Length: 289
Image 1 (spheres, rainbow, N blue to C red):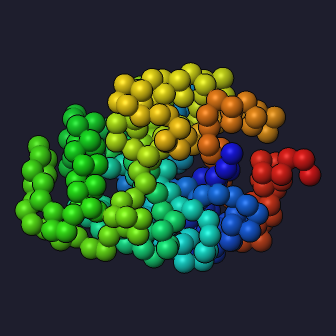
Image 2 (cartoon, one colour):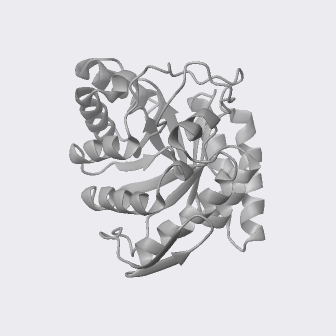
């Protein structure tokens, strides 16, 4: 089972010198992938419930620095050469999908084919309102935008007509390096996200999942895959835990997890950040040491 690291882009993890230190240390110590999440805006007193905590509140202060994940990962790509990169997640319905197709393919080319596009539907009505995008219907919008991405990556010129998007004989280049497609990972813990992953993606990313819930979530994913004539083994299964310890790794692997994602906030200085990453590697990658 691979081990990824979700630690870039927020607070101290938004500083370029810390990103460089974390990214290079993670690559050197055997982490498989760097993840970076997204919120375009946060608000001081949200009415929307955050779905990944018991109290419904996101732990990140509204005034914290939060980098654009595609730009942050492009910086990380430039200072590394082997470690994979993924958005965890990009809130796809908040964006123009033609622009996302261009940006994601660009990052894939600049990283020499190391990028996977993790997407989610979003949960903050306030964020959608600030961006002028309807909150209602964001699931349908996400499904259509995924189809737009696939079309633009595979065809040249490309045409598409949908509920939200329409273009004809349009060229968007460069193309992703892996046969005109990018691996897509769907994030989210609910059944709708699992259905979307089974239907439209190459992977699933569960975030802040209790370790006891992981087998059940993967069982639902397997059922959804079977309904569509797919084997769950065709998908990558990445999980960030809300609890758990290294001794849970064998059981998680047996349940079908292909990547454990360690989530954390790095220290504010490059040297301390490098030591922090080394300690995480000793805990999660080399627990026998």
